[in-house]
Length: 230
Image (spheres, helix red, strand yellow):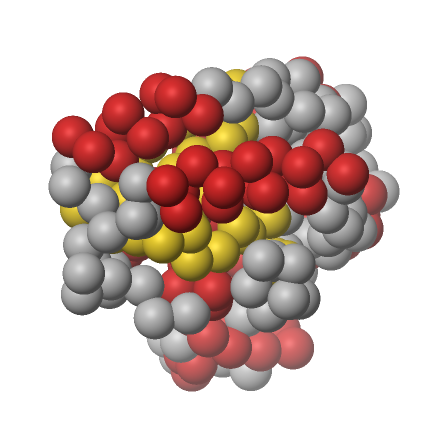
């Protein structure tokens, strides 16, 4: 009898995720089962699935947090050597690049969710803050996006003069500010509010619309426009 016709209960634990994918498709697998396929085998005390569950638990069952793990951090798990750690990092990086390619295809910003979809692949998983500006034409099409600064864990410094120099170069009608919070906290700081107010004042003089300021984390976002902060 062929392998595919064998009862799933007869498969080796480390084979079950692979055969489950073959029989039922990739959507049927849990995150732990997909990760188990990447690592192939567990250790003396754990199957690949059990080890994967433990790794994910350590990352709060959050793939975004998993993607932030270094090779050295992954290799602290018993059963994860350099080769397996490299496989995990490479797979997650492919996923990140795919999201970036999808984001590039987004031609129009219609909502703060669109901003999140566009920018999360760039800054959502970073361990430091970056401040970006999205430049739009009169149809809200993205004509350019630019990182203006990058800083530490808690903040960045933004030169408003450079921001509007770029806006004028691209003949932008509207702009959207965007930065990430590595802490994961979706709360606007006093510095965030002050910067937004200063940009808004300058934008009014130049007849450019500040449409939103979106704070992004690996899982969600806060929109100044939706929160009526601008």
